[in-house]
Length: 307
Image (cartoon, rainbow, N blue to C red; front, side, top):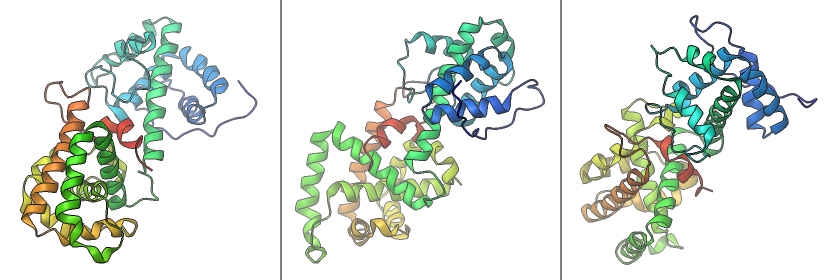
């Protein structure tokens, strides 16, 4: 390993049924991955691979705490292709990670080279999630309304790129029917900005209703938004009650001032439903039985288009 060290990341402590886990080693491994230090990560992976209990714990943390492995399937935000041999080894073990399953025993039975592959992929998933929290804006520096509007902007931005014809049609309707009502605002507010505000307001409403704070915002079920957006009366109340962050007051103002206009609410609400439906349809887990789409499922798509 290189001469420098990485302060270990604090990870959930193992339970009494998981003896022999090297928690410090796991924290140092996660820190090296976040720092992008391949020499340290590779050396620490060798140590993890020689320790079945710690390898099993790394998979346990990856599956239970930040991600959820969807019955052993890989999550959509993995940076590796599903047919990669590392992922195959990881998938086999992740499938065994249930409360009642002897995944530690399965890990002990694995050859050390397979345990290293398992640890490698688990580490990449864990690091990807932590980066999503850090770069996606779920830290303590943001308020819940700010984070929700940022998510709305990410969802709307991806939709504009993925569905350009639908986006152009909404932009035209906004410019012709709604933006012209605010000549005193100076530069017209962009259609995408208003759509971002509406989506963010509804996401905030869902988070409050479900008792979800910043720390659990990635687990917000955004696929519940259409039920709100199709109810123009409820959408109007949500827009009026939402305390818009100061940074978005400019494009929040038209949305709030039109929050009693039935035609506007029907138009923007219907468009926001199209945005949500496009994200759900593009989620690679949408065909799973009883699937509900959460924000974290679309991490790469949402954060890749955000400022």
